[in-house]
Amino acid sequence: MTTPLNPNPTHPAAHVVINPEITPASTAAVDAAITSRRSIRAFLPTPVPREVIEQILTVAARAPSGTNTQPWQVHVLTGAALQALSLDIVAAHDDPAMRASHTKEYDYYPTEWQSPYIDRRRKVGWDLYTLLGIGKADKLRMHAQHGRNYAFFGAPVGLMFTIDRVMQQGSWLDYGMFLQNIMVAARARGLDTCPQAAFTDFHRIIRQHLGLRDEQMLVCGMSMGHADPAAVENSLVTEREPVAGFTRFLA
Image (cartoon, rainbow, N blue to C red; front, side, top):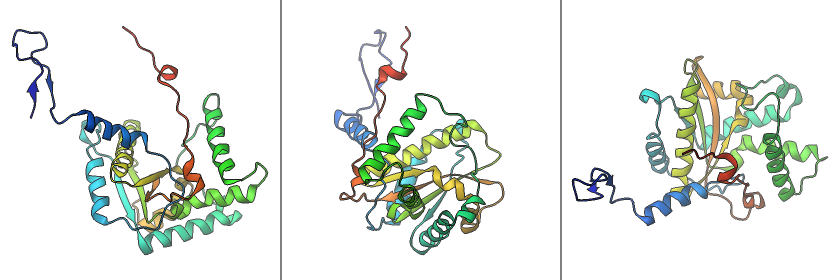
């Protein structure tokens, strides 16, 4: 239900309407869900009820998509299914020969890095490793930390996202909005997430476990659950460029 902003029908703003459901409190709640979202890298084993996951996905599905194509496909793993997939990927990650036989599903990052992107990438990496006490020469611990991606960082819920290969770049933009909706809706329910492109390295293993069709392409994975408040890595808060650094206002 909407109400007129100005009751005078001759006023230029007479037909501008506001939604009475939008209040300072509701705005603050949405902003808090967005700004408190972080990539969590250590979860508690506390289960997440299926109905909560379904609620999150129902909300997320309101994401916009070109001509309402809704290109997202979600595969939710818990329990034995999650454990089995994790064990197979970790085994491949830890075996140099097996790891070398796997290739990425697609290029997530640029083939040639430049500033400021490479600088931001390096900083967040070393900020995390510093918290964990991992030095630049400690390749074994770096490998082990990266491998925790494939154990879903201990989360009780793993999500895999696929898209039909026929869909083009615009649908990937739509997909990003859907993924963001999931993470924000999870925060609104006291849950945390970690979106993970690292899974694309092992898309062939994932394809087997999920029984994917040839035309389905892995977009990314995501861990979901309750953050472990005692884990030092969860204290990492990444920096963001101020509005003035990425915006031009033209009038």
